[in-house]
Length: 80
Image 1 (spheres, rainbow, N blue to C red):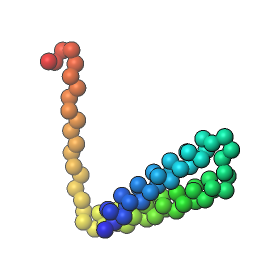
Image 2: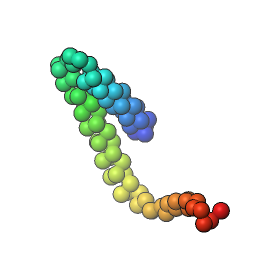
Image 3: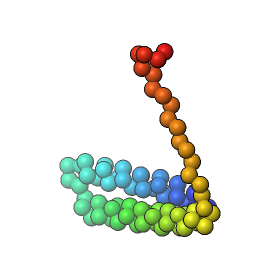
Image 4: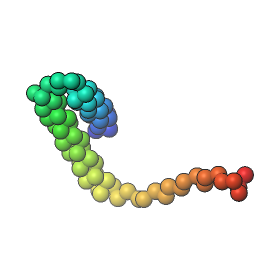
């Protein structure tokens, strides 16, 4: 449930950010609309932060193990 909610909030936050940028790019931006959009975006981010904190507490209980991540080697002129 929290994964779907988090993704939904992330998408909404991105849409709100686009609206903020669109409004700011206008010749005469509506300052009240900008304030409202920014408050909404902050509320969404606060909710996302709570989800992350809850997830971190759950991870501590499960004792997750680190995963080794390997990066593919970049090809150079010397190794074909």
